[in-house]
Length: 589
Ligand code: M6R
Image (cartoon, rainbow, N blue to C red):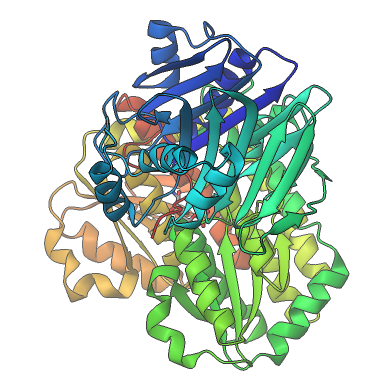
C-alpha cells in the first residue's frame, strides 16, 4: 500500500503536497517524492521518512500550482531512490505516482524495452509513463493515450499522471482507493480524505475504472469500461481535521486508544430503521458468514460468541483470504457480512466479489463510507469511529465490537438494552484510558520489555480478545506473542512455558474457574501470570483491573493491552504509528 496526493488550482502546490504526504505516511514510509509543473517538470524524491527527506532536499522548494506526490510501501523493487515515485518516461515528460500492483508489468516491460524504452527502476509503476509515451508517439493526445494505457493494465491501481506540456491532472482508479476533493481554489486527488481535509470537506468517491481529467476549467470523469463520461456526486463529509491530527498526543496510537471513550458511543448511535433491515436479513438468511482480515476478523470472532450467547444465532466466521475454500456453501439465500475498517482490503473485496457472483446478499460494517466495500454491498453500517491514522486498529476494533453488540441485542428484540449497555461503558472506558491506568500498565511494560515471548489465554469471548491482544503486541513491539484458547494449552504449547515466561490471562466471572485452572497450569511451571479481570487472585503476579462487562468484555479487556502494546513500543524505542513492514490497509492479495 502507498499514498498518492495531487492538486491543481490557484494555490502554491508544494505545501499542499508536503502536508498531504505527512498525512498519508501511515500508508507507507519507505520513500517519498513529488513532481510539480512550473516552467518545466520539477521532481524530488528519496528514501526515508517524509520529514527526514524534506530536511535533506526541501520539498517546499518546488514551483507551480499543479503537482503530484507519493509515499511508498515497497512491493516491486527494493527501497532505493530510483524505485521511489514519481516515475517518468524516457523523455521525462510524463510523471506518474501509483498505489497498487500492475500484475502484467513484466510482459508490458519486455515489449516496451524491445521498442527502445529505457527503464530506470525495478518498479511495476514505471511501465505506465513509458506506455503513455509510446501511445502518444503514435499520435494520440495525453488524455486518450492515458485511457488506452490504463485499459491494458492488469491488477490494481490508483494513479495520478502529469504531462510536462499540458496543465492537466489525470487521476484514475481500479481496485485501489482514490478520492477527489473539490474546493474554491482547486481540485485534489488522494488515496485518503485526511490528505486534503484541511482544505475541503467536499469529496467525490471515484468508482473502479473511473478516470478524471482535471484542468483549470473544471473536472470531467470518464468510465473506462462504460466508455463514456459519467456523473459522480459531491458528498460533504463530517470529519474534521482535528480528528486527523495528533493534538496533544505524542502518537496517533495513543490518541486513538484514548478516543474510545467517545467512539464506542458513536458506534452505538445507529439509524434504527437500518438496524431493523439488517436484523431482518440476519433472521431470514440460510447460512451467515462473517468475513474479514486481521483485527476485523477478531471482531467477527468475538461477535460470533456474542451472537451465540445473546441471540442464539449461528455464525460462520471466515478469514477473507480463506473464503474461496467455503465458496461451495454460498448461494442466493446466504448472507455475507463483510467487516473492514478501510473498506479497501483486497482479500475482503475478493471474497465479496465471489459471494456476489453466487448471488449472496452482502452487508458490510465499515469505517470509510464511499470505500470500495460500501459500494459493493447491498447495505452497509458505518462504525463511525472517525479517521484512524495509526497502522494498528484500536478504536475501530472496539467500534466494530460495539456495533456487533448492538446487533446481537437487537436480534433478541433488546435493542434499547444493547444501546444502554454500551452507553454505560463510558465511565469504564474513561478510567481504562486515564493517565493513572497508563502509569500502571507502564510498570508492567517495564517488566516485559526484554521478553522474547508472551503467551495469552482466554475462553469464549476472552479467546477472541487474546487473539487481538497478541496481534497488538506483535505489530508494534515485535515481541512474539501467541494466543490460545485456555483449554488448548495442555495440548502442546505448555511445553514452551519456562521460569518467568509471561502469560496474560483474560478472565470473565462466568468462566472464571476454568481459565484460572489453566493459569494455574502455567504458574506451576514457573510462568509469570498477568490477570486481566474484575477480581484479583493469588495466582496473579500482576493484576490489571477491568470491570466484568459480560458481553462487552471484549471492549473493556482489550483497552489495557492496547496501552501495554503502545508502552512496549515506546520502551523498545519503536515508532508505534509506523510499525515495520506493515501498511494501514492491505490492498494487495
Ligand atoms: O481495513 P481492514 O479492517 O479490512 O484491515 C484488516 C487488517 O489488515 C487490519 O485489521 C490489520 O490486521 C491491522 N494492522 C490490525 O491492527
